[in-house]
Image 1: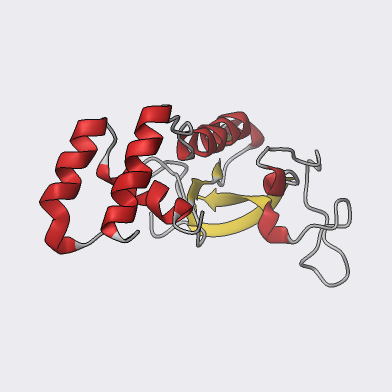
Image 2: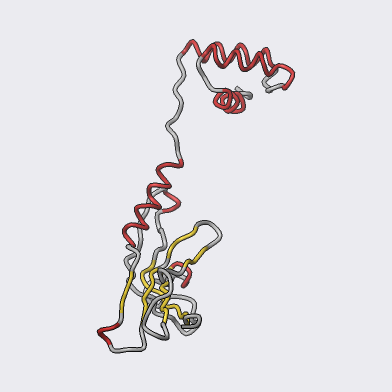
Length: 173
């Protein structure tokens, strides 16, 4: 009942080939097949880090201590890996627990969609007032005029942050 021995195998390729376009598309490679160098897949030519990491946990007594899940983390995001628990017994005693790849892809897409907010549309009146006020400010947000800026933003019903972004985007027009 000591520490379980951990080994890893690499499954389906998770590389997003449409990331630069803002979409999500994988190549369909189902399993990592190492080349002579060992770190690139012979099927899709992607590095093994793009392939789903599957931890194979061998238990000494056939019982699991805890939930049996192993976490893997990268620099950008934390992803649960698939876990296969293998007992020392017969084939019938082996148990497999998998985290759904489809669920992981759905969560990634939801994070991408959540990241962007809709573009703010300004009325002609708001735009004219912002141009006039921005030139009065000298096209800079100044701390000593913070109360005046807050009042102006409330008056035209725009958040201070949105006004600041608009000001920075239009200071050279």
